[in-house]
Image (cartoon, rainbow, N blue to C red; front, side, top):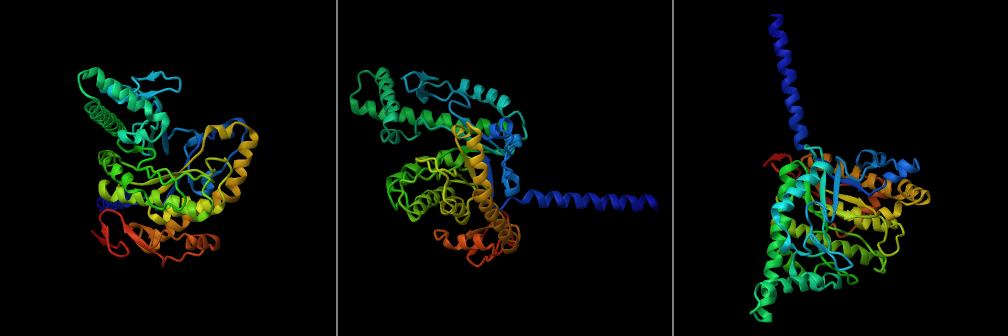
Length: 408
């Protein structure tokens, strides 16, 4: 009898454990802010702790730049990223057409073993390749990228010396884009194969290029070129659009619209080419790119707040190593985090979690009915009042219903 009772107890405990694992497996943060700045110098050299976790900001252990929460690869990593240096020197062949894919893949494997040694890595994996654009035409819009157009034409001319200029141009475009696609797709596939739990994608995709004042949507040609990158979005297991702000935009409204255009395009691309489970994280910062001054609170709302309202899964908080070179810089950022950035992030994260739990039964995330209006969010944050009437639920996979309380 005793043995039967013990067996029953063990069985109940085991079933409870399985149910707990099941519930954990289907839960996810409603909104997460992840620190992606090389601030470890502040803690190591100056003993200044930003206490990010107290504001619900996720960070790698010991404030390291690469760790379990996020890994960011700058070019030429991972693998053999081709580019031209400012002095004209070609690195790894200079253009995608000259990169041997088998060597590139092997180099990626070596890079991961050294820089992401944990095979169970389940954080955000971000690849920042910006020297050239994978769509050939896009390289004509920026002077420092014209070298990739010219070198591609030279290569095509070498291979087909008897062709006319029109044929050479078409072949240069075809060869460049096919090679760029092969390079980027294979890069994502190998990192996903070797670190399958990570959320992998390229920084800054999709782009909008809405740099004009009050331009709250991408131009038609930009949308068409983004559609040509369907192959990239389909293979990415996370999207990382960039929503950095410059003070050249004269008003909070113009900066708000700048972010809206990028987020709108991200949502469009995600709906067409990504799986429902593919997360979206806005890459943002807390300094104006042209002045290096800290964002006003209204622009933290324009970036972080709008990202939540639009239905993004979180934000990546980036900063340059140039801003961590002295004790004064570390102390200045510490004060800003304690007074402005940290409390706002915590308020948004708390609201997102509460809204998901109460409004969506923990099976979905809240999305603002009209997310282009952030004044309501600002009021909610400043008063810390949980009013969910302006939010609807976007249910996670396998759930449906207005409040995500029905099995899909």
